[in-house]
Image 1 (cartoon, rainbow, N blue to C red):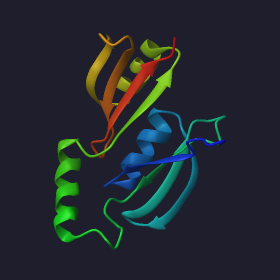
Image 2: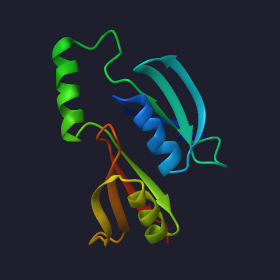
Image 3: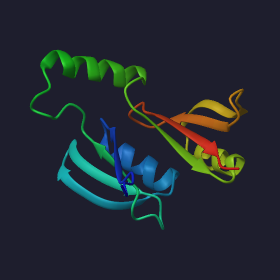
Image 4: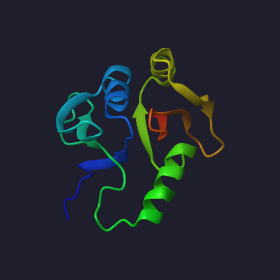
Length: 136
């Protein structure tokens, strides 16, 4: 089988703030932006990697989600426990400095982990955990 990861999903509760974080702070390109107001589906991805994208989407818009589930999702987003993603860079320190300069909530400064990776972590405007790992 020839399978790749094409797109992953992260929720947003403020499309403009999320767009500014992924485009202006992380430097991702905007591939599409559809919808209006808070009901926008925004696809972003790293420049030069057209086969890999993140879909920033309003949470709990599936008609099969119950009101109780919507409340749970909203609560988890507020706590920062609903969505997360792991990114990678060859220069973690430079990336950390650039992201930190974007007035982003730092969760963890660059750290050598006991399981053999060096990484840092931030929260995006929706509370999603964004971990960035150093590629060695």
